[in-house]
Amino acid sequence: MPRNATNKLLHKAKKSKSDEFYTQYIDIQKEIESYLAYNADVFRDKVVYCNCDDPFESNFFRYFVLNFKRIGLKKLITTSYKPSPVANTKLELFSDYAPPKTSKGRPKVTANKFIINEVGDIDGDGEFSLKDVALQLKRNKNNEWSPLINDGDFRSDESINLLKQSDIVVTNPPFSLFPEFIKQLIDHDKKFLIIGNINAITYKEVFPLIKSNKVWLGTGMGRWISGFIVPENYDLYGTEARIDEEGNRIVATNNCLWLTNIDHGKRHQPLPLMSMSDNIKFSSHKNIKGKGYRKYDNFDAIEVPYTDAIPSDYDGVMGVPITFLDKYNPDQFEILGCSYDYGRPDGWNKNINMSVSINGENIYKRILIKHKRNGG
Image (cartoon, rainbow, N blue to C red):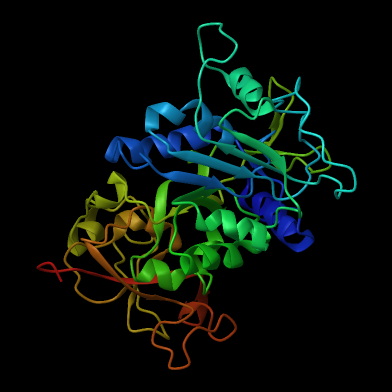
């Protein structure tokens, strides 16, 4: 999908507060399994909260409930953020089962809450499936299925009370509310694994956390995330947008990533590098090979336009693309800042000198890094 089409779609979503991008099961499975491969007990005896996921349609709910016993969950809490046009129409997790009726005089149901404490073969067919979950919920046997009093907004008292009961939040939060969402997680000291737009890296609520190694990228970004399910009223931009065999409308994007504070093996893999002289001699990039590295006008640092062109033997400050963070190993590099804040006495300011420049030419957002030597 062309980047300009992706940016157009996500910018349109942020501007209009159209946040209904539903994560596909395969993308959730790929990401979570990589954490389990690094630490098989990462979810064991934990309460997982999916707080922006309508249980009827959420593939986060589907993954965690189907793998509840295997990964050792203590409890799964799932709440819908708001009514959705695809609920009970596309994923159809519980299409044969109506939700519990509210008592007379109660407000109209606009959001649901599922609390799963146990799973098992309820219908006696010899295997555990979503049908068993639906039956168990319908009978309210050790699990809970009930309407939320309010609309399920993650900022509501009702949702915050559920957040306080949880250990790990795993979800696809509204892109337009991403700064507020991550701030809430940090304020409540929660572990989390969430999806965001790649530009979230440079938000003032996010980048300082990355810089201080309190938050980092997950294992997948860009085309590792195969696309999002969107409602009927969303435009299908780009050549990679499609309708799958189940009728789901899929928007593919190379502009999203997973963000987390849960450890995984990828962030401990050292990035293989060549020396500066070897890069100048042998680099596959035409603007490096035979030309060397340029210095910025407004930062005392060299421009490294590609992550694989970081010189192994340069001890000064280097400006690298924000996609470097997908390869960032905190044992190998130190993050000093970004082009929004580095060396600026007034701190973070997106509107002043927001780009580094070379010979008066603005360069796109950069992360400022340097090598760690001798462990420090």
